[in-house]
Length: 319
Image (tube, rainbow, N blue to C red; front, side):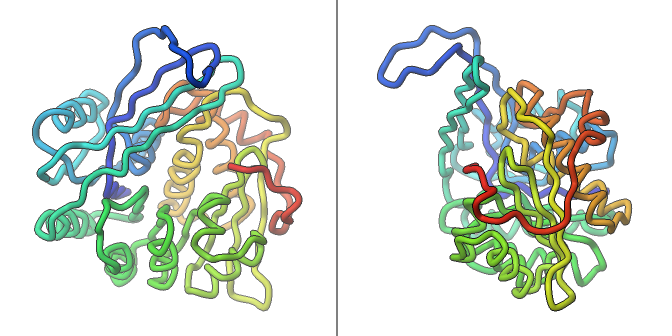
């Protein structure tokens, strides 16, 4: 079982149009809504891959929260939804058909009370008895105190459960210091969390903090997976041989799903981990909505180009 915790879930709303013109009015077709948030996207991909998974998240019992819960049930994704007050945040994606460019508007969400946050932690911890991997993914609700992510990581590690943390800011380093098996920043999050403009230095700092592995994603430049333990990190990078046209929203979540699947299976070879994560991430770009992957993903995995080392600064593409 893979347990995926989404502390700050959302109702994802997506509209497509030929091109977005700032300051102009646009007529569009019917939008698409679904239960979302980074961790929910991870759980959705794992479910599509046939892996046992459960999504744990706080969720209002009415309004958009009921829509969220109904969507997960309709998709067949097992979920433990912890009741909370307030409203569910919304995430809006405007996707341009011609280029695949996605413009995102992500609400910050509302704070959880101490009791609600404690209930979420209890629900996640209760699911660890059947877990092989714990994934904590996405933003934290405003006002979440320090220590929540680190506490979940330490509890899972104490039980011998592998942990992936795809969080940002101080929580990313908190997860690393708690001994997460893998932390997964994108290029911007890597700089923000570590203060290092050079990706290699940022990755080294997370490994020095205590993370066992770092998987850093660099948009069209692919991803890099590094592991500490020696004078220099062991690292490989993987990317697709050509740019892909599509909606990149959720590509990083598909990479996390791939890594969670492989850690659950005991895969430790960095080249295999990187190749599969890059291929499944590319398959998400070719799917219309976050949380989906193209059925061509096995072919994309085989096409991924793998090389040793951490990307140099000049090789990066903004995410």
